[in-house]
Length: 307
Image (cartoon, rainbow, N blue to C red; front, side, top):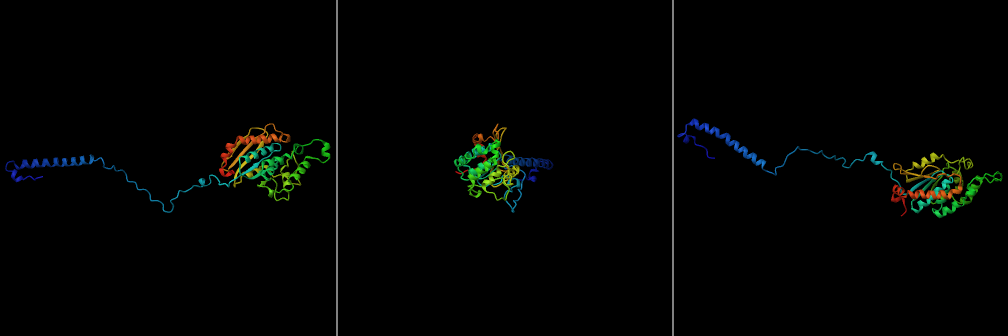
């Protein structure tokens, strides 16, 4: 802008009036410049909107992995492939385990061991010696109700043909040439160890009960609750515990923290020493687990079956 020459203008306009006009013109020029600057800043749509500056913390050079808490580490214990079974108490009702094993065999369940007591012990050994359900049926068919059932005739007892004698004679006849080591899979019986007893004698001890057979050569079966608890606390494989009851309803319960499945098979109105109903008991056992097949297979993994 061309500067005003005050000396030239002063010839025509009084100096005092000229100075006043110049003083008034300066603020107006400044205001116009500021307005133009503001207009430029506002009219730029691409001007970034600035916010607070956040500085992220520096990464820990010592460890970049996510830390796993103790709870996550011990969520579920790892198990080896295969299933261990527990066959609980029962005499005539214990033959329900025969039907259970036939169902599991048909499903191709990988059974790697059986813990069993009372008639369940007889069933377990009959299956484990060949792992063939037909062979198991044939072995168990030799233990008729006439051998297993009680006789009340005083004449019979006087001749020494007591239930203890009959059962021991048949056990020795069927299993005398067999040992626990000859079985296809391990069978654990509730017999205190160490002991010098043969296989048939250990089955005989497992059949000991105040209302059934007397102790054999001073040996009685291990306390049932302790025997069951020892099984339930095993950590090598998935566990299935099967028990029979003479009343109530059949139930299935899973304990994921211990990889334990509990099956309770109800046999209503069964007299536990009525061995004439053992075939019916086997049928009920098979029927119960077939009904639960979806739940049982969902509890186990693919590695627990032979494919």
